[in-house]
Image (cartoon, rainbow, N blue to C red):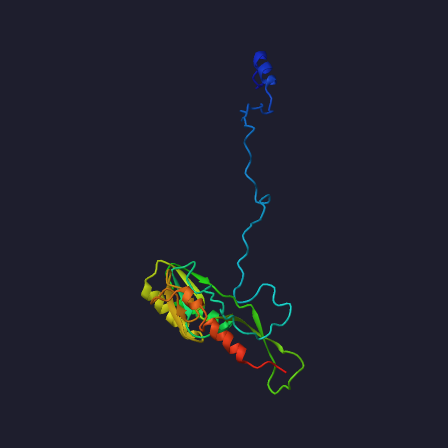
Amino acid sequence: MPPPRIPTSLAAQLSRLSLTPAARHRPQVLIPRSFKPSPTATSIRTFTSTNRRTNWLIPKTGESRKSPKGRCRVPTGGSMRGTTVQWGDYGLRMRDHDRRISSAQLKIAEETIKKRLRGMKFRLYHRVSADIGVYTSGNEVRMGKGKGSFDHWTTRVHVSKVVFEIKGDLHEQVVKDAFRLAGNKLPGLWETIKKGDPPKMGLTKVGVNGVTEADLRRPRKKLDTIVESAAQVPAAV
């Protein structure tokens, strides 16, 4: 049986068909001139003006020369610097004579405070830094031949110096207990002070019991007595 015939008009229409997809009309998005694309991760400049947090137990650059043993600073001129709370609400202050404290002792005291205040919101400030090197020689070594090899880092803490400060929503008794435990780990005698407590000049509190700064700065002896005693000293031959 012969195949059916396709009409001429239908064949003409089929010949006009094309398998090529027709171009679709895509709407154009108008971008304003003031629009700036967001920077990608590769175009971000990693720069900051804030100094990196340094380690307060080890100096950043070390020492250019070996430090002498030295002595702690004595405020003979009546200085009261470093004896009050500046940044926090409570502070740990030394109340006996000056001494050297090693970085290991400071680290243990810091860990003791953090362990006692675990789970509480607070901020701990360090008022000292261990930046003085201590050098020792071995046992049964004869005198001379240099200062020895490096042993540890230490700091000189003068009398009435504040070492730690704490700021946060903490109860006073809790802070006192934390500072008491930290003071037991440090050499010397320590006390807990609050923000606004009077400063100390040496071992004396200024502004308490009628003691003023002018009274502590005045000479203990009269000037006439000093001149007379100097005149009585025989001149050197």
